[in-house]
Length: 208
Image 1: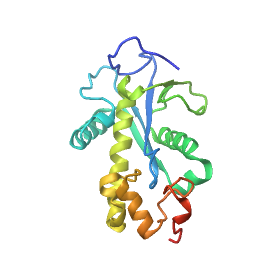
Image 2: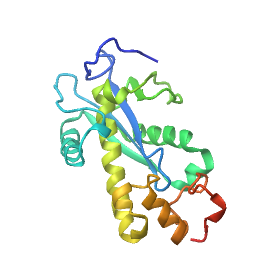
Image 3: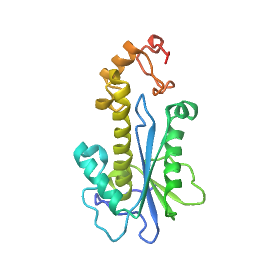
Image 4: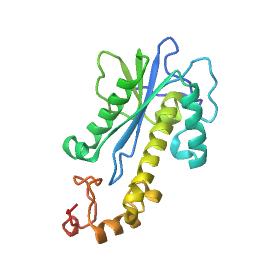
C-alpha cells in the first residue's frame, strides 16, 4: 500500500509502466450487481476534472464518462450479479469484477493500481492498493466514474420493471424508500439475499 505526501492527483502511479487503475461501484447496495472498471490513461494527456465519482454531479459524471471512453488508452467495465455476490461475498465479488474488467482490456497492463486496501493477485501483474485512490490517482478516478455511471444506468433500466423499489433514485442503496418497497412487495431476483435487507430480516417475503 502506498501513501501520498500531497493532494495533487497524478495520471498514474508509475510513469515507466503501463498502469491500469481499478475501482468498483455498488458494494454497499442491497440490490443489483457490483460493477468494476479498469482504465489505462495516456500519460501525456492532462485529464481535467477527474476526481472521485462521489464528488461529481450526475451530469458531470456522464460528461467525463464520454471523455474517458474517447481519450483513454484502454478501458473496460464488468459486473458480478447478486447470485454470485451471495455465493462468494461482496468483497470477493468486487475483486472478481475488477479481474473481469482487466480481462477485457485490449492492452495488457504492467501494473495495477487499486482503490482501497484489498485485492487478489491478477495473473503475474504486480499491483498496489491505494487508500482513497479515487481522489489520488486519475486512472483510479476514471475507473470510479465508469463503474458508477454504468451501474447507475443499469439500475435505472431495472427500475422500469421494478418501480416500487425506487431504483431510479437510490440505485439499490439502503434508503428508507427502498426498504419500504422490500417490506411491502418482498424481494426480487435482483436483491442480495445474504445482505440484511430489513432491520427485522424475518419479515421479508423471499418469493420472487
